Image (tube, rainbow, N blue to C red):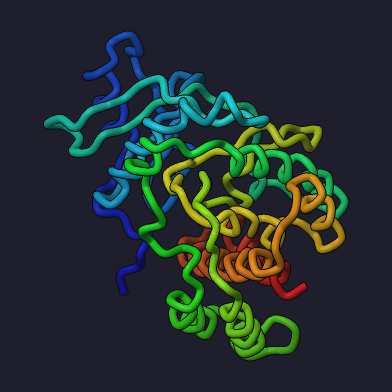
Length: 304
């Protein structure tokens, strides 16, 4: 059965190297090392300095274009490093999609590390400050007219509830503590929360453990993968409080962030359930233990 993360094209190191050398001769010889593949892009570390991302599906094309256009506007206002596009690759006869290259950011994706509850809690304040800064960036009239909106209905819980329940039933058998029935019941309650009615704000749109970069000392050093950047409901990003932080650390995030309406908190919790089941299924079916573990942690976190 075809899965939503299955690629339309395979991007090999050879394809990546050829595309980079055709369009950016200064990088010859290009030596790409695979960093990993997500739903939309394949990422390579090139010559030990740059990260290049190549779409694997046509649906990712507008996402990478939005990232290249808007990240330079947002980055100076953020307290955490984000990828700054330096190379803008265009479609050509050798590769059909646009692609982008960035200076490599320091740190390791949080989903690839082993965490204690205390270490996770140490990120509550910096995550809260990062999200407060992002969500407070003014939306001017041009951005309001041209920037992506929430076309995927990420924050429409009632629309997403049936598929979430189907995925829960597929991912988890009924069992005490973390069973599909218990989680589906929680999802149903959370889906009754009122929707976001204030004006939309800048939202990362896909904030979970694998998109947080952390240095050895446990410091939050970067936030990556901005393809889902859009104007929407801040609760989509606040889901990191449930998908990553322990319950005791969530008040610190809220203190750092500022007031969060309880309805937004419920929408964030619902979104954490979405992340949990998708990451669990993705990790299980691709053999990626880090994603599987991040998904299970998110599901447990949403229950607490």
